[in-house]
Image (tube, rainbow, N blue to C red; front, side, top):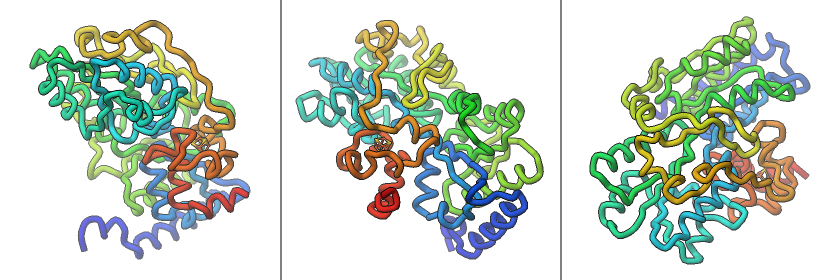
Length: 381
Ligand code: SF4
């Protein structure tokens, strides 16, 4: 038996499901009156559907899919700005593959590439740095995107560029942070949330204390979780036990990976390179104070917004409404299940996505489609 088998062991899964069933009954939760548990991270959403945990857990447990997919929460205006930069003849625009098919108002990066823009997929910002070294006559722009998980690697690439004096490298910074949108959701009087499954990868970087406010200010339990089926089942059980016992605290189910105080090297790189933006627009959530990061003045020459005068670099960014019939905002905030969107599986599929939630490997709509497919569509009809 290897390590992965341990975390997928059917006997242990059965024991956890029995315990979840018992505690759900003790709480008095039913299909009509369920406990609402938000899994913040899109990786957890996919794991829940991949392993069928939504079907295995009792009907008294309802998973609400949170805004923890960085590609999904990117507003259309930022995709437009990527294309605006990429279309400049001197630019080689580099991005992770996930972002290539996200639609903006003028199409996606993939379509801009087909139309002639020099856009290249990379696996790391270090690949973009290498391109900058090899192409001194071109401007290499890296699309910095993601939560605290990817923020440090972008910061390290900017620090490396500064050390080497690479003047032709810059970052279009769209890095965002997890705690502010959670506070925004908790402040929303229309949201019914009883507890949270906290993100595992983000917490490897920031630790568990940035979530203290969820328990202390809002009285809600949160359990930081791993990504294997037993991790998730155990985390759900821990959240349910807190609810049953009238407790609210931050617990760490993923302690084998997540240190209480995070990763000091990553945190130091983040603090050196970035500062919070006064506010940042999130698809489906609107502007949220201090939820995005910008590059500090000390590294201004590596900031593509300032270098090319786009987005926040030219003042207030454009606000672009969602496409007609798109329910991404409602799905993103847990108000609607993906199958309830009129476009699901019809005007919006992984092959022809209308919204970002159908594109990203962490998007809730992609999870429903991938693991439910035609059945999910039939169920919606
Ligand atoms: S089905 Fe498509 S349009 Fe509807 S919410 Fe999902 S991604 Fe958005």
